[in-house]
Image 1: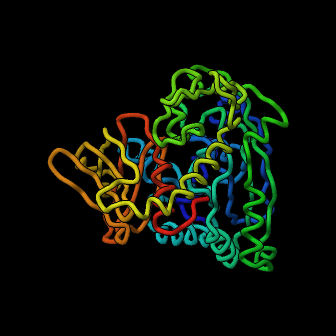
Image 2: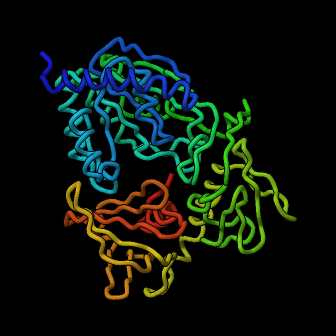
Image 3: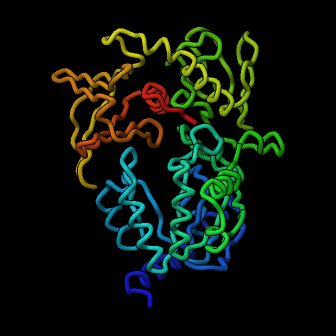
Length: 401
């Protein structure tokens, strides 16, 4: 028999879905396939493109679900109190080990309740579905052992409607696609590798492939502003951190410039020919470029940073409501460490002592240390967080997908 708390969550989910349905259908122009699960409990997986995804998945699903959500979204005390008392949440600290989150997910599924999560762990940075950890297949199989099925769902159009890097939201169509449902028995009969193949296939969305097949306008103002938080290497001069945006133009200090159109593609805006026509392809190119320079970076002297930015803010994150500002100054990544230099103090974080590294929203860098401390670096100016994630992964000998 369901607990009183679970019954309360189901009641709140029903009320919230009823209230949200007109909003997502008419206000944000979202159409969707409804999901009637054949088996319960289930783990629902979807791609992650907007901050609305909780609504974009919650409205199509007929059954209440616990949501896996980032801790950084609930630091506001009032919001945290309301949401924690009305919705089933499983909190995940980005840049920290996921053991507690996984244990709570399993406990919820064992109780007979359903769980939703995005296996990408973060909204798409470039319009293409992000890397999904191979550990996801193992988790799905372990959940199947507890009697949980799997439902996969895709959200289209969200990236261009509200780009992760964008300063303003746009007007345009979004749609939700039910992909498949897998019973616990089906999942148990498959290997972890086969389950990962299913997840990656079912989750994959490339916004720009969608646009080339079926061009859809996404109109608004200042379409390119803050795009330098995602694109950080100029394809002409190959300099890092010299791109700047204004209105619908992204330009480099070398003179190269492109216009970002309402169809989400680039067109030439200066005298130079167009080198790359979409964000995803540009992002793949810049990652490959940084990787090609890795031998050079590893030969840098100990006191030479690989990359740095000024006007940064370092914070130490404690409990949900605890945020301590440690200083403002320069954040840098070296071949063997992160470093933050303020007017009064220098903070050094050796790679060997870092437990996890991630980024959030447009510009927040998050990392945890092996001693349990958890830090966030924010920026007072537009700057890329993902470039630090890419460099960190390469410098510690890992790939960035």
